[in-house]
Image (tube, one colour):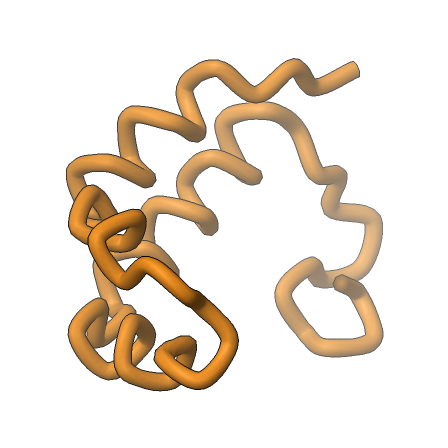
Length: 66
C-alpha cells in the first residue's frame, strides 16, 4: 500500500483506516457494471441480486483484523 501511495511514510494501517478505505471503494463501484462483467462466469445471476453497497458495507463490519 505504501508503493501505491495509499500510505505515506511511517503511516500504519489499522482497522479504522482499512475499513474507511474499503467503504470509499465500495461506494465508488458501479455495481450493475460489476454484475454484468460476471455474467459469463455465473450460471445463476440471481445469486448476485444481493450485491449492493449496503450489502458489502455491512459485510466488512464482520472482518477480523489482527
